[in-house]
Amino acid sequence: MSVKTVRKSGKPVVTWHKGFEAGSRDGSVAGWNEGYRIGRSNGIYTQLGERLFPIRPYKVLYVTAGIGDPYPALDQAIIEGLRSVVSEVVSVSPAESVVAAATLYMPDIVLVLNGVILPLEQVDELRQRGFRTAVWFTDDPYYTDWTIGIAPHYDYVFTLELNCVSLYQSIGCTNVYYFPFAVNTKAFYPCAAQLSFQTDICFIGTAFWNRVWYVDQIAHYLKGKRTLLSGWWWDRLQQYQLLSSSIRLGNWMTPEDTSRYYNGAKIVINLHRPVDDETNNNSMLLQACSVNPRTFEINGCSTLQLVDLRSEVSQMYVPNQEIVTYSSPEELVYQLDYYLTHEEERREIAFKAYNRTLRQHTYAHRLDQMMSILFE
Image (cartoon, rainbow, N blue to C red; front, side, top):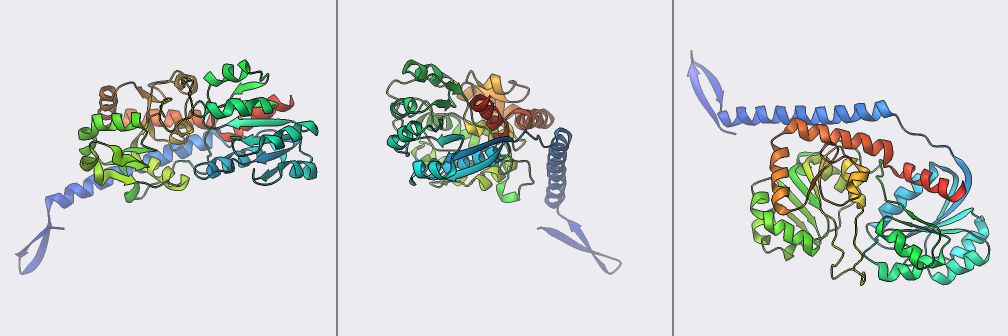
């Protein structure tokens, strides 16, 4: 901190550097803005109240995905959602004998997340013994080469991709439902972010090639902003050296830290995975129109989201009122620049998105809807 000391009437007088004054003023404004964001968000939560759903007298045997990150966080969110809508939930790993667990606990439904790890022989035996089974696919349409062999073994199929409903119906599945994921409000919620988590622009996710291309196109714009890119493979960027100070490379961020970064960002970018990436197993190149779980998690933090345009986005949120879309790097830069300089508009859209998310897009909402399908 620079100061200038002078003497007047024999006493030292300290005159603060103008840079300090400006920094203090900017800090006060930033603190007020953050306090206003949290206060308004808390007001929305209080006004809506915690939605309580009827507890149905059913027992659910939940089979976890049995895979590493990010699936354990999804498992926990779904288990908590189930506990808010049914009287009893028992969870097991697909590495265990699910048939033995079902025989012991006698559930009304066996719900499996993803279904890739659980042996199909166990699913078939469950049905032979009279247990009803359901699978919730987590990654459609990116692994449909696998899931088309799994789906027919279940009584009910839930998929987060609308375009996969007709696919599973075409191979003989009779009970198929479009069922997007949601937000876990215990992990993703508005909170004050420490300085180390504060950015202008944030993107957290794996650097699939479409994402690499987008970021390369706008790299010089991002360089001039407080930017965070976090995830695997961002060293693929042609502009990696330009953005290296903004990149957290090669780690999977926990939901807790992800939430902190979402809360600390002025804008969070959401760019969906491509259907033709080399890491996929989607030889049919089935197109995707539905939203990813990140869509709900960002909005659950009361932060402005810019998302690439998919047709189902408008079914979840009102474009330009609750969420902002883009369809090219040029449009993305335009939207970023506009909302970084229009604070009030940016905040109001984020508040509306948060309101909508609490009203319609929590895991309790989803699991209540699922139980209605399975039991009513």
